[in-house]
Length: 379
Image (cartoon, rainbow, N blue to C red; front, side, top):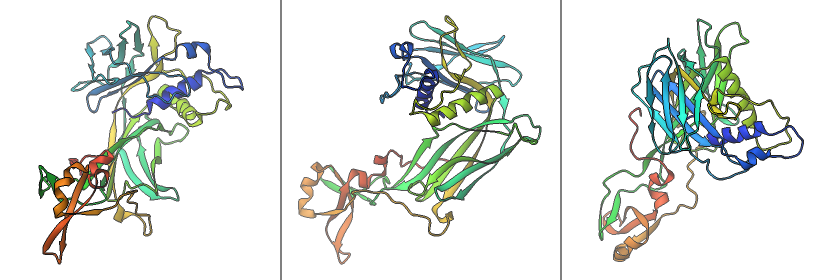
């Protein structure tokens, strides 16, 4: 699971590499060669998987999707042990599963690009994450804030990183139990009114208990659901994953977090350059952006229903421009060319059928908003 907004990360790196002058300026080496490799890798000992995403930087201000590295060879290497090649997904992602990893060993990733350039991470030990004690939520003026609490009785964790996957149930504007196919109206074979949508976190969420006497993180803010969202129209779920970082990895993400928040103005004070643990084998001084980490993770899921929210909390069903109309029986032969969907029968006195309601696809088929009508197993 790729948990970070890599485009923001790459832009933040360009921000970090700019000089400290007070006027907007892009160094010639970055302007002439903006495609610096970006590596985001994680070895998950709990799930027995390793995922690596390879992309390239862009010139500052670019609005295009980040270029992806599609033809590399990526390997996971165990020190004094085996080397395994990750499967190329051909979308910038490389992964391998069904791994058996040991907390007593250290691992690194090796990358060879299509151009023959070679990169390697530092060897990294797997950090163990304590359980997430609780996931809670509270109502604020901004919306619903989800919070995580955890602790390590051995005081050995100290540096934490969280990611999450949201899933929510929603409906289309109009229910449809009829469909028009091959000139015939029949009962619809599948439900297109109820859907579920999933979204992964894109922000950098970190916390530390380093300055505390006890290794306790209490109600760490994970995300805020704004009051104008329809995510809790019916039922909302969030699965939070927790990692423990080394101090070096924590400092890397901390500096990157600061600069992704400040990104957009070159007049802000320029911080020192952040160094990851990925290196260019052939030219050690050339910058490579990103980090490879490893660990045993913990996770916890929270459900929130609209009925659980405080009285008076806004109920949002966002269907701009949706309206329902009626097509009479005698006009049905032309309905197949309208690009619209039937909703429900229209009758007189509940007995005499005179036609059917209809509306546009985006108002009838909930899948048009990007979700699926297949209920998740955990639901």
